[in-house]
Amino acid sequence: MITLGLDIGSVAAKGVLLAPNDKWQVVVPTGWSPRDAGQQIIAELTRSASLERLQIDAIVATGYGRISVPDANKSITEITCHAKGLTSLLPEVRTIIDIGGQDSKVIKLNESGRVIDFAMNDKCAAGTGRFLQVMAQVLGMDVSDLADAEDPSETVSINSMCTVFAESEIIGHLAQGMSRGGLIAGLHQSVAKRVAGMAARVGVVGPVAFTGGVAKNTGIRRALEEELKAPLLTPEECQFTGALGAALLARNL
Image (tube, rainbow, N blue to C red; front, side, top):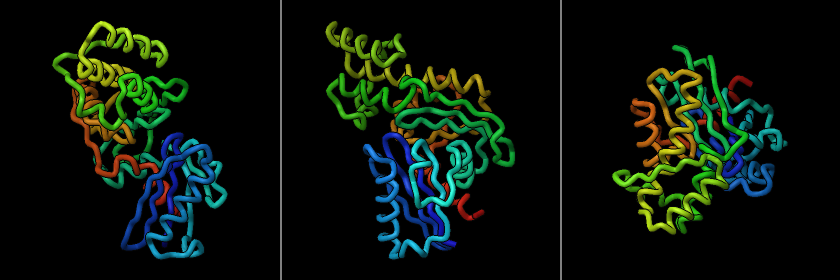
């Protein structure tokens, strides 16, 4: 079977194409149209695999834009797809922490890799990639440079979790001449505290995996490990676990 999984997030859209002995993946900005992003991914993946669209047996879409993909045979929730994708990579994991552009989620699994509980933060930017993106702009940096610029030895606590208030707090700290590296470490700490609090409500059982685009930020990973007092497993394909799970679940169709 040849299947394709689409994870249409608010910031980035990911796609994984699975063939019996090969795999292709791509990520593109979602932009203003989840539908167009999905079509772009399908086009790019079929071109990379030298396939025609009709050769794909099934397509499953997930993510916030999953209902906007007319080519999808079925849409499945993010929780189910992330669990399926992550356990195919790290079957020993019992808790998944996923931080994306507009939401963060904690998923608890049983020994068989089935979801037994979860929590999501999708009503507020705090604890998400969007929060970090806004703060990076205030600091005059690209969000991808935050991890390298942090200085945990001079961590400045950020008390406001609301993005608007945190922005004002950062501006005030900069005006006082506080270390930018220390402020970045404080931002990482504030995100980690928010997510760790959500994880505590679900109940963290190890091993714990860290996925999503924000998992590429080593500063967030460090801060989360400190808050959870546990090591985090971060697969190389951390951004693609939802799309991978969707492609695997498409085989059931």
